[in-house]
Length: 502
Ligand code: ZN
Ligand code: CU
Image (cartoon, rainbow, N blue to C red; front, side, top):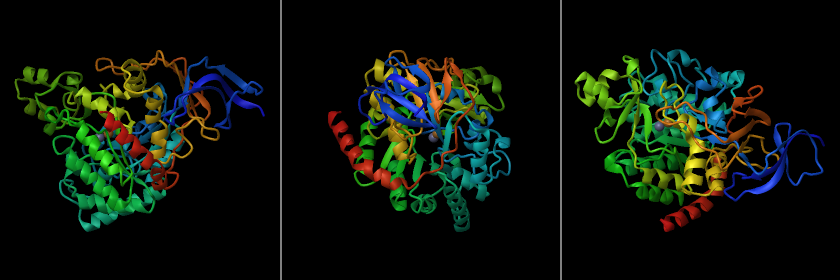
């Protein structure tokens, strides 16, 4: 048979957390058709990888790309990193199903202005993604805060029974239309007043679908362990796998506690499918939150609606100019966005290294001065953390951004270089791959990402987008509970082994 493409002499790192092996890989009909020594096989096109790494396209497990995949479908911040699939709808905020009465409540404004929210049903969003045909595949969670904003006149209280049943109906319809699960952002004021029971009742809708519960915890500061317990209780109640979003020890008073957090995660993993995602930086970014304003570490303002000229400046410098306290300055800047240098590098590395963690960018594509994770998260893990610091093997880095993620989120024919799987692939140079985006110049494409294929089509090479965009909407492809069960015990075993070494 004549294949579409043969990639010859690649170091195949297949996504399964095992070392790479040299092989030729043949693609046809958008899928990986054969892997091996394919000297006797021909294709319409051939390329010589010359020993460079061929890995599954990276899955960005934590994004806020909900509306940008439609409005700027070239998705350059992601495809330049080797990302071929984004999971949207994290932290309780999703573009759909949403019917706004006015401006989007904080932090839904991270997804764009009111005009960007034009998907009253999840099926509207799904159709819009397919029509826009972004450069990367898109799978989506439903945000709790989005549901609250649809059905509650006041977000600063817990929901009443009639509101909960209306939210449940919308969540159920969305899951039936292919949503992956439910996300919450309980730390944000717009969801903080929701009692655990409100979330538990919503999460009951996940059970029948075997769908996932992901959460930006109620606190990442001192009460983080209690917040993790709440997340596990919600997941157990719904018999639903739990993914803790961007697990971290936030705030100077919390530094050094990552072993406690990871012990809690491992303990929960013994009896329930749980995991987490993280981004490879010691600074976070979101809307400007008065509760997080402090002089314990620097805070940079990335945007401000009333004072757009202050974007890119340090909060304390603005406060000095205005002769105001940090708090009053922040209040005057709102609504605004910020980067908080509020983590300890040792905690970041310990969480990133843990076998239960996946890599996600948490990038904010609407931000005029974005945190560099938007353009740099994946190459930073491959280059800086794996190659330069030796934090873990390259195949482990790849696993955390491909096979582990696909398994956790039930993307059943992606995330691995295997015969029959979808041909989402990235070819990179293990010696040179690196993130270039930094806090001063955050919009810079990575180096060392040589070629990216999405659904079998070359989509990025030589520093440029190639061909027509090939991404698709990816519906939930079955119950996650089975997939989780099969990896749960193995992961739990690895997790305790990793802790024993620490
Ligand atoms: Zn978040
Ligand atoms: Cu997020």
